[in-house]
Amino acid sequence: MMPDGTFRFKNEPQDFAEAERGVQAARAFIESNKLDLLILDEGLAAVAYNLITKETLMSLIDLWEANERPCELVISGHKIWDELAERVDLITEMRKVKHYFDEGTPARLGVEF
Image (cartoon, rainbow, N blue to C red; front, side, top):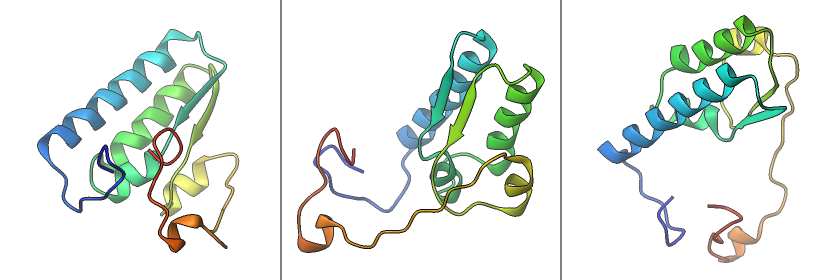
């Protein structure tokens, strides 16, 4: 999402760089063993939109398990795949019933982006 709350539909080089920065930060947080909770917000969307690979996300889970689950790990997003579903402890599915965005309200800084 753009800073003004609009969408663009093509990944740009800086998107891949930012996704890689996020992956490296997640690795460092997992290895630090200093967190109680790590949320990879829209981690599944990063895979769905080809910013990272399934293998990259699975490698973060591998690292988390190898570090004896140092914290609670939450990965949000959509389009879960079978291998991931088999590995995780909890899956919650949400669906939109009503959203103000449908009435023309633009995305809000600090809420949707």
